[in-house]
Length: 54
Image 1 (spheres, rainbow, N blue to C red):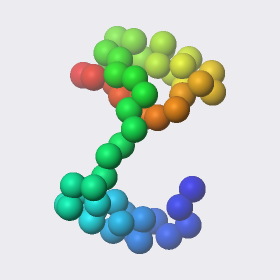
Image 2 (cartoon, rainbow, N blue to C red):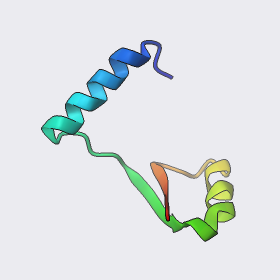
Image 3 (cartoon, rainbow, N blue to C red):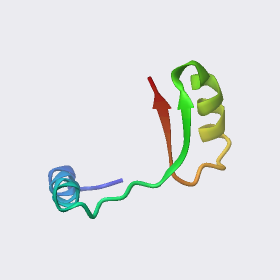
Image 4 (tube, helix red, strand yellow):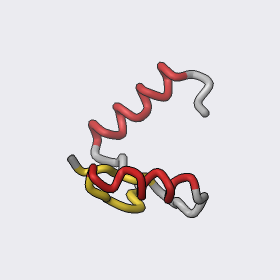
C-alpha cells in the first residue's frame, strides 16, 4: 500500500507517459463472469490483475 499516494500517482503517470508501464494481466473475463473473477481473486491464486471486459 503506497504511503505517499500523490507521489505514487506521479510515478505511474510518468511511466504511462514514457511507455515503460506494463501492467501484469493475469486474466480477462467478461462482465457477466464477475462472480467467477471475484472467486478467483479471493482464492489467492491471482498473480497479476484481473480485468473485466465490458
